[in-house]
Image (cartoon, rainbow, N blue to C red):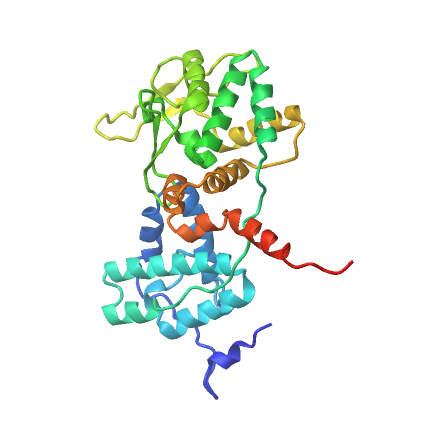
Length: 338
């Protein structure tokens, strides 16, 4: 374990985290401005972890004195996170910390100099290979085949779900949020709203994959609402029902029926996997395969990164299988005497 005393000058004690001096909470502002409930849950947990690093006090994200943090505190927090967590987890927590500090600055709770110094903490370097696996062409064919062999509406729907996850590389949360109006059948364009990082993007579906999606819409009907609906065991498609609040001036209505969940998509894929008799995989593995197959086919990595909705091209590069083939070919250039 790293000795954190090396961060301190001789005779200096570990910096105690300051106590709250204001009822204004920049953490709540930061969390409220995140793009999705999942992001808010993730970053709330990260802030709670940081708040509890100081064992001398009982804090959480709401009670921690964020605006009183200075460089000696944030650099110490970084050191603790580096020691206790994987670099990717620690960097996520540092990102949350910087976000709260920025909110404190905008609220006028920190001076510009104090904010600049406190937020001047670099990410922790490291590298890990992405988890999961790539699906082979034969496995994709097997998945599609079992869906097409199912004469119920669920077979048509599930084939379309697999088509979009693989051909468009969507995250399952993005797929669950798709509306019928997000799809333009004349061009194959699909608008993905508020993906990771709260950024919209455009993807395209074509050829047999588009026909598979169009087949589902023929079964589903052209009623506005979620693109993919739950289906009962009897084969009944759940109708889309929109609930408008009493105050019609507020755009806070929601679909209370006809929506499919992230977990339902996961279960659908597991059902079809078992029927197809292929090895276990996750919904994200279809996205991973989408990126790898596009790069193998010669697509530009910048374009692939945009299609995948990656904010950092280095994330896309992690799924580039070509570098492994290059290393494999290099290894074959040497010959060991038999």
